[in-house]
Length: 239
Image 1 (tube, rainbow, N blue to C red):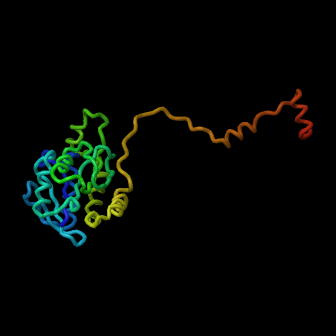
Image 2: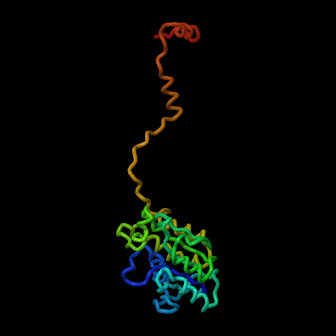
Image 3: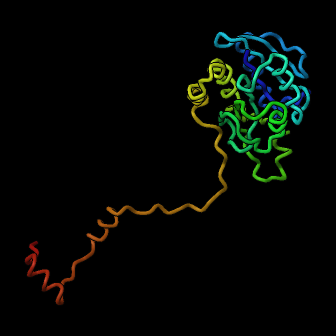
């Protein structure tokens, strides 16, 4: 059995939050791959199905984000699984919206849900991080992650979730490079680009060839020692 945990906070008031993109991802996987209806178990909501010929259990912990490890830990212990059988999907502030990264192990990056899973399960599990962007000011982070996605975000969010759902079998097989390639194709290869602050236009440097041509157009002296020398070297210019 393989476990895919999507992180978020339970309750309708949090459903559209950026912090709940992990919930959204496993919902998309369930909807697109014929998984069972969600049911309550292991301090979470679970949905069962199969991908790549293997039984897969999706879980959305209902313990609130900071205690996500309690639910995920219960699942692993009940089925006698190791962290090698676990993939966690969650939001990442340090990636631009729409970007995704996958890795095994590592630090929590300050993500409380990951801190909890690390504490309950260990650190050597695979992590699919989905970019939600950083608000630019540490004081605004809390409001940013618990704020809802804007309508314009659907332009990158919908293709991202659809790409994850349609290629989830690659995640189960452990074919992470192939998964990332497929996801890049599904999302156009890049996330939403942040709008840069207005800056003064930078004058484009002229090429060395352009500068050489400019120098070649300088007027030749008509009198004086230099003019006499040039006449001896090249002869008198004819009309």
